[in-house]
Image 1 (cartoon, rainbow, N blue to C red):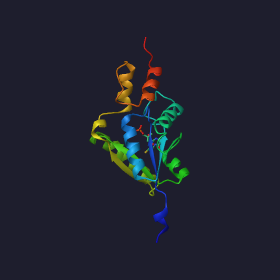
Image 2: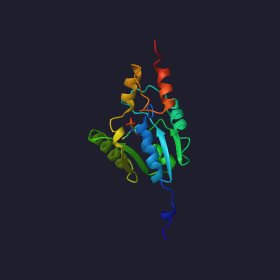
Image 3: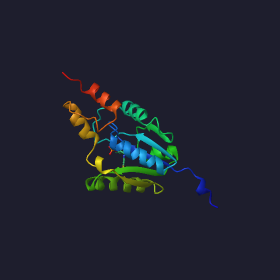
Image 4: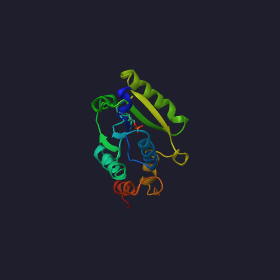
Length: 167
Ligand code: PNS
């Protein structure tokens, strides 16, 4: 019998998580059931200008996943592939909301695979009720003090209020 059968299936779910939404949380819950261990890694996306610091984003993720025993939260200020190598992980999870996500996701998955062909990216389709949801949309609503109650966990809602205080 191959030893592979006993290897822990460690997956990394990378993203900006600026901030974590209920859509991300749905992907985290569902993929934590599929893999033995899930590492949610907060990374910087150089094409985005973040609202929350990498430490704040990490802390919010820790708070909203504390009931999930096989989920670990981490951050990294470098290329995803270097993080994967450091953790000896080969599986990447990304959420797919709509066809519009596909081109960018395919480019990332193909690039990561080109950089190291041992990496495999798994796509999990979002639950339909979250298919329109994004951190950018949440920030846009929060900036104008609109309701984000059903879109993000309560701690995130509070954190957004701190970033965009009324009056
Ligand atoms: O949530 P996002 O912004 O869609 O996540 C994108 C992210 C952070 C996973 C991506 O930008 C990334 O991997 N950044 C780290 C730097 C890197 O490895 N870039 C090359 C990716 S092909």
